[in-house]
Length: 290
Image (cartoon, rainbow, N blue to C red):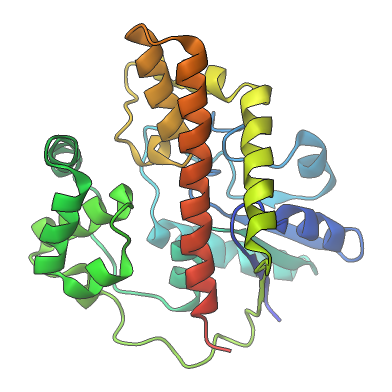
């Protein structure tokens, strides 16, 4: 076994399990989280505590500025040598997280995708704001039915990315993926999948976690990011669940919305978005070969 992947929906207990394993054998943890790579995104990404990071080596956390891009291909380029180096130290790499695109890229590589085009992304974001996300999803369905069927109509980041790839390459995103995945995952990279059977219990944990993030200062964290002139809500880092909703809350407060009303909407939107994310994560996990 080269590494163990611990995958699961948000709030399913992945990090706690990884730390429990670390108490029984020599391991190092590699984050499989597209938001934890960014410096300054701490509360809303539930980064490991300073104590946990001191007790067990953690990797691929705080390696990018929020203004910088990071992709699944870059994750694989970073993770593969880390796995080899951790193995060479006589330790087991635990790859822990919920960014299923990163896990897929590691397990079943796909063709290299083009880098982001800021101008195209900004225009698509404006079109989503003016015409509605449903209109962009319908456009994607016409151009790339396979990707549209796989990407939910409420997932702005992936819809816009798929349309961006089509504009840059002239080819559907689905055609750039490998033709097929192997029937079984690489046996040297086994997957431990945390799939809660009680959806209502998972929803309670999601709500409790989001409330804890608010109590710990998520809004102040986003306020600090928002003060930077080079950051804006269309950046991938700031489209992460929780950050997108907190940015919108601050916009509403700037427009004079009552604080209690704005905070109530933030809580409702943040929990709903997190539930949607968990649903997508579970769908992906349940589609894994067994």
